[in-house]
Length: 196
Image 1 (spheres, rainbow, N blue to C red):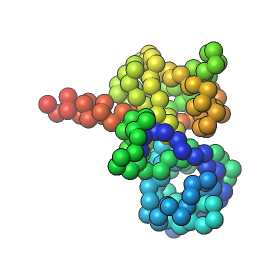
Image 2: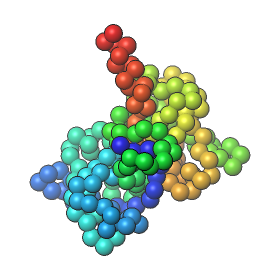
Image 3: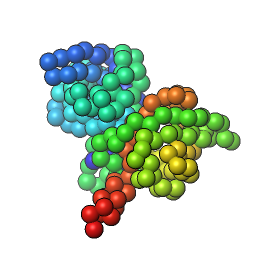
Image 4: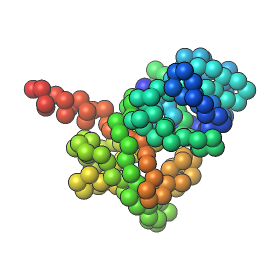
């Protein structure tokens, strides 16, 4: 489990195909002495398992399913990636409860400066849009955000300067594809309504 609070922006240092789909090596500022092989780390909102590590980097393997259902299939060397280590019991829950399971890929429709912040509007693949509500939570590229407004299949979020500067969201432009995870409570509530 995660909180959607990014704790490092890593960089893809190597990508290669393997007999197990694709392997990414990620440069990080994390203290890798405290990261075990088999640990879960969220990469742009996608939970992946550490399979190897070295000085200042670790490796993950990604299945074809994940490559197809997230933005990871687009990743190349040099790409900056929001990273978050798994939450531990007793950690501060600064964002919201995040599973690291990407629900879909959205498309950025617009990015506009608004005071010192930035307003970002994102189109969501249907029927995912029915799980998004104003003042609810959503994870975009692994970042926990509050939904400001929803209009059909497009929602808006406001990025404060801190978020803009310390995550990859500061590089968003219209047309960009982003990993989305809906609020876990919304998912279970919708399932309950379908089966009740």
